[in-house]
Length: 353
Image (tube, rainbow, N blue to C red; front, side):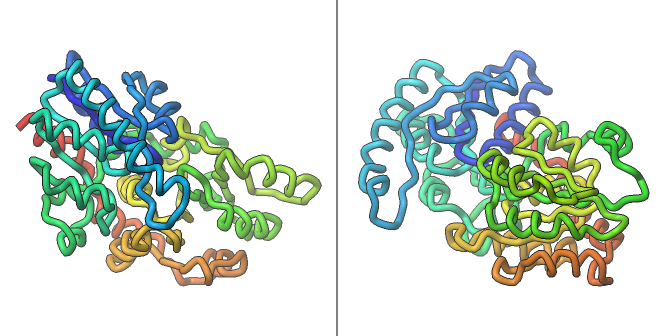
């Protein structure tokens, strides 16, 4: 089998592609897998590290506001389309699996012209513009959330999660990270690109962490230097700051008792797989406010508490931790009930179908 996985930009698009590649390799170690990504995203670092071939094409988001990037985006995408044609003609895949995002548009356009089977996957409740367009040409449209059926036709399969995250042992993870079992570990993360707003709020609470809690704060590479400078000379205990730590995410998620996070769909799917209670702060400027819809989809079932960014503060965070507003046991049960641990297997069944 030869398959192309179009995935790029942020971790939310890349990680589902890697999860699918893992499942294909598990079934058929001889399968030929080629990732196509853009030069501007995280894929150029992450995918080769996972041992998969990656070809980079020109791609740019079709922005709705007037700017140099929005004006030049169609021309960049056309170049990416020509590059995709050349790659697909040479590689001759049987199927394209696309995880959404701007890099997928030129690849899917080329695949349509060449008559290659197209399967797309939508991670968020509210479908992205690329998937709305490309669903008209796809053999199958696969969805993470049942709520997406209000906006797009497709089959609900869940969001595939990497095997390392699904299988990591909690006791081993806590031992490796040097965590004490009697302390509640709060993992705080702002997505693969980090969140300056969340970082500012969390570090302002770092000197007031309640007894019995420990914070692990994933800051992101962009903000890590200034956060380190801010914390110098401050009396901070039970707090550790980390840059973006792709390789250690399986350990951190397995070790956590509670996660404070943005509401990206792939991050939520990983938290559900681990049965983790969540405090979700949706990014208010996400396209179509899709993070809010993602957060509501899990909160309505009791797995998360949703806080608007404008209402989130260090006092609010500490209050949620120290009052009885969260029932960890019920939230954990709710998370497990919403998880779809067989998503990758179902998707690969469809790819082979």
